[in-house]
Image (cartoon, rainbow, N blue to C red; front, side):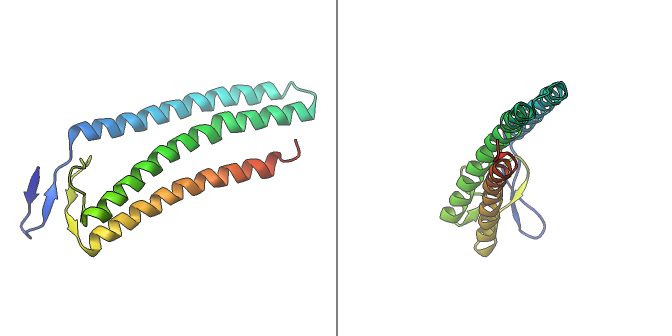
Length: 147
């Protein structure tokens, strides 16, 4: 729905279905993260009973990969792909939010340089998500390279 305010700025109202989908995605990711944290803590507690250091480090590596790298990589990849697509649509349309894209919250319609800056912000956020994945993989390699 398109609305105007006193300054003749145009706004698109938020879509309740998109809000529901966004909050459901965030709740599911949070719940999965909490459950994985609990399982990882139990597995780390079990490592205290292991007498072989190499076996303990190997198990810690598995915990790190399975309970940190994989879930965060999935989350950052989904988020990054969505933000890249939104940025591309904004650049192509020259308007933010691009036509046909439902927004979860009220958004001011921007054109020209403001729309390009919004698209650049989306690209930057997507790249930051992919950098997080790369840093996690590098950190894992540096910590566990001698196993």
